[in-house]
Image (cartoon, rainbow, N blue to C red; front, side, top):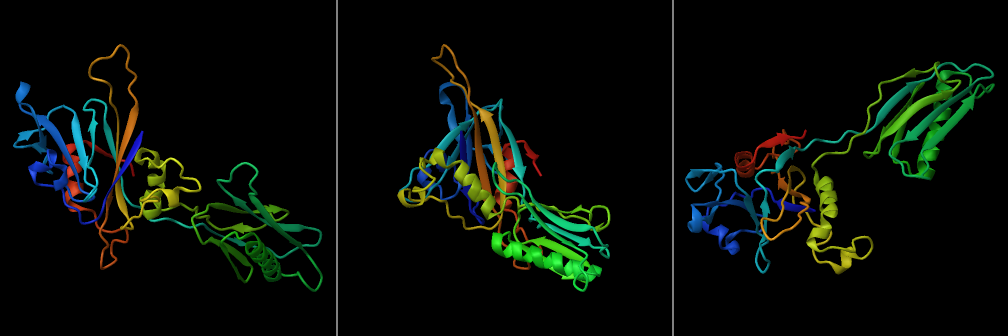
Length: 314
């Protein structure tokens, strides 16, 4: 079971203690946590402050309740996190890296075949993953390293156009460079007789951004069924209001609370199910662009490590 909660940038942690008993006081996108305070029959749910206090007392090793506001005319989402089994990890934003490699070609020799090969990574069964271009010494046409590079580069560009590989091919003197335009990862290698005769530049492997808008949208699709969105393949966008989820921020800090919660009473056998509560806290854009992944939410970045023990995922 997975649930995703989006906290937009600029949202503050609630200070009104009444939110625990009156969820209508929670603003849309606001999330609060509570524990039971007091003893015996006088125990009452009490807001955990962003300093990690239950009222004026320290937190106990007890279950933690969460409340998430959805705005006017929508019910508050609530749940319980088990005190003994929960772990919390935090993932912070990281910019993506696009693929890049340059290969330097030699002067062609008669009788040898010079081939360059693009190998697409992460393909599924029966999906094409190899594209190869080849040329050889041809009198008056391909006799220099520059001519060989131009020929192979042109063939790669033609494949790129016909097969929509979404790459950029650059030829400079006797060098052929391939760069990704998206975050698809590749290998760019020399094969056949070119193997061992070319100079391979350092290969920069592609990596998709972490905790950006698309990353959180994917999380939302993974958690969709817990929001009642069952048929998400073809008709989901038309039959479910609010699906797919719209996001207002470009970057997020993502906290994952992993726990299992068993029955407390009236049981003969109980198999606790592991659950994930995922909290994506939006980052504010940095007007100076010094921090390209934005500025962390001050309230929730302070509150969550006080309420939970948070481990850094990356």
